[in-house]
Length: 296
Image (cartoon, rainbow, N blue to C red; front, top):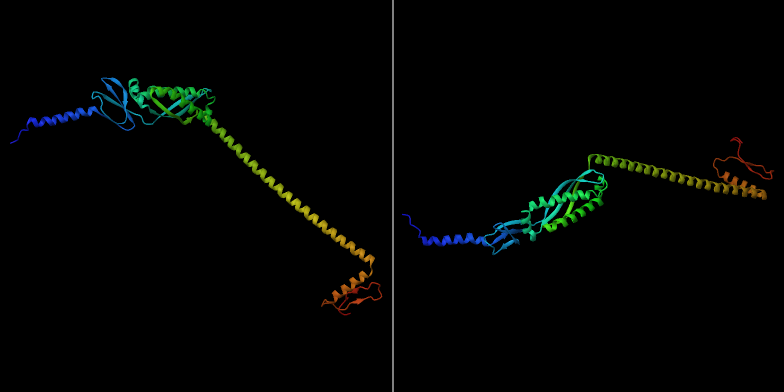
């Protein structure tokens, strides 16, 4: 037979369960990177609860949690320039929620998503149009100094507008720029012409270098020819001087010819093919005579 549990034993269990259920209402745990805002019967409480365990709290409060970590919002807009052309621009806004102002955000917009839709997006698009009108030509958007100017201007203006509303903007970055198609084609054609001009300049420079090398080689050959001609002139002058000295010596000293004749005869006598030589003794200047034939 089943036994009935006395009611007195059930009461403590019921009390513990009720205490646990009600007791959890006296504290709130907020995740890392978040803040919690409480409402009491729809009335927003002025103070936000930071991450971690917060005790004690009013058990009647209803909590709304906000993510205060760094986030990025991406936006694409058509930006006009002074030449009345529309340039497509992709930008990224790096921002985070100011946790100390989470109560105001909940009261005014309800959530951070509503805050982005109501405050950030419209202001960002308006600033893009205003900043774009300071650019004279659409193609100037590609200039580095233009992009830096736009990023700084957008960051400063957006920060000034959103900071009092509870959003802290750290940077506005330009991701991509798309010019009108006809301008893009014109820029590409311009680049092609510039590349062709650079190619022609390089070819002209190469031809100029080759011509300079040829001129240098011709100059070197001319100098070499002049040096060779000078060398030959010096050698010819030396030979002429030698001949002149010999002729002078012969004219001044007749015995010089006899001495040279004897030297020549001595050299001839050493030739194994020599035969019989005759000297005209009656001649004042006898010279050796070569044999006329083997029969003499």
